[in-house]
Length: 209
Image (cartoon, rainbow, N blue to C red; front, side, top):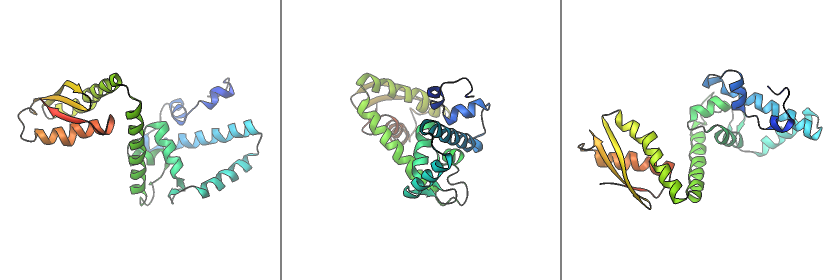
């Protein structure tokens, strides 16, 4: 897949591109594309610096010793997991295991992996909060309601409509079975509000009108 490409184009290749080139890989084999990507990285380092590959591997081994190892079974470091989250948009421990093998043996590190996932997306959400314009925020709220919240409510015969947005106050109307449900307040706070806080802004307040 790199024949005929410039070095700069090759540097843009990701493990996802490698997986796509192989007509996709099952989730449990995604770590194979990551291994291919790491081999490509080594080749590029060797090309750029004219460094012996053995020296590169020794340097990487030394760097790994100084990094925090999350999965002792496979020697997966915290930085490797962070890179996998950033490059592939992984959301669950199972996805991280598929891409990095971390947690794939004894499973004792799965709690640490979940902590890393939570920390990563907390930082990403804080970053997004500070960069969203008011118009972008409105569009994102509407998109989350339409694509994530509404489909879940419709599974139980309910639905939701966005009525208005005033700063961090999001005004909605519950429909269908949700409108007369005795647990509607719980739905608003535990599901709708929590989802919007997790994906858009931690200060959002959802109010039914």
